[in-house]
Amino acid sequence: MKRHILVLGAGFGGVWSALSAARILDQHSCTDVQITLIAPQAELRIRPRFYEPNVHEMKAPLGELFDAVDIKFIQGTVDGIDAANKRVQYSTAPGIHTWINYDKLVLATGSRLNRTNLEGIEHTFDVDEIETAAHLEGHIKALGSLPDTDARNTVVVCGGGFTGIETATEMPTRLRAVLGAEAKINVIVVDRGTKIGAALGEGISPSIAQASADLGIEWCLDSSITAIDPNGVTLADGRRIESKTVIWTVGFRASPLTEQIAGERDPLGRLHVNADLKVVGQNDIYAAGDVAHAATDDQGHIAAMSCQHAISLGRHAGNNAAAALLGVPTTAYSQPKYVTCLDLGEWGAVYTEGWDRQLKLVKEEAKELKHNINSIWIYPPVAERTTALSAADPLIPVA
Image (cartoon, rainbow, N blue to C red; front, side, top):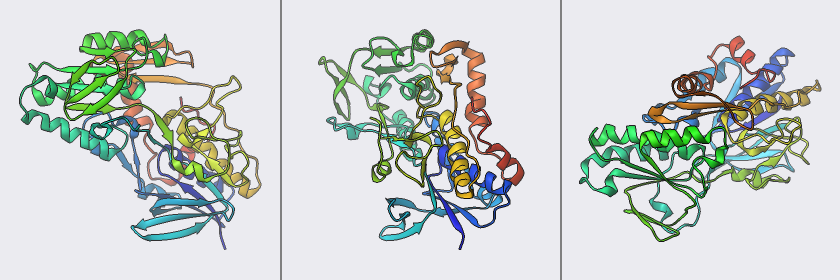
């Protein structure tokens, strides 16, 4: 009976985990280990692009790629993890549950937007999943049929972090495409910070402020929202903003499946892992992507919830799960280089290097780099065995 590596999730961490495991099995001519990946769809959803229009196109099919490298795909939703008995329960349809055993497990089920119990939160939109981003896109297109009011013409973005900024700076273009070039567009970012882009640091903040000014984006700083309704938001200081479009971008948390694995978790719910990305306290479970609290270097930096880190984490987790099964040397995870490339709509983009975000490129040059990242670099390899397996080498730098 074949031994079994089971990967949960088809995001960046899951796809690259499976490919990397396949690579090392191929290197050792191993034919008695099966790699299986379970996910709701056989597609890599390009989540970093969900703030863009035409979001239904932001996905890459995986079926042919998996076939090319002998990865078995199961379409299903994971319901539970039984670490003691080394098995996972998944459902393929409502009420149809199946157990599957594993020898090594890679958890790569990502993160999700953490919605609060705020009054009226159900009236907000988000760009967390293709389905919710598509719902927002449909709503924006429908605004053109509404009467010309401040509420129709105003978008409120809750949160001034990475997702909030990219969403807000894209909104003027998207709104004018629907409402017309002469429409009085209002895009307002509500943020708890005391400075524009404060969450991203001094190196990048001036570019965000300049882009916001040039695009006509207003920031309500040192502010929070206390209530939301179909026609707008109420701020903590009592101010009222009329808006038909409120987009929630605040707070992400690791998949709740992490709670089914005994181990230490950080405030975001991510499981602490060692240098091999094995969950601390577990012999046969690895974590990759947004579910892993992993040190990127010896300077105290922890991997961010980003595709930049998820790809490398996946390459290492899959490699090490397979290596441990084969009894060959593992490859310690290390990713000391960190970059930021933030899309700022029609203004351009800003690119920085290092955890202190040293400014390197702005406007058109950074925008060209962002385009390459979003449309080429983060997509999976072609469905050709040698090329795909070579791309999964954990020693390939991501940034």
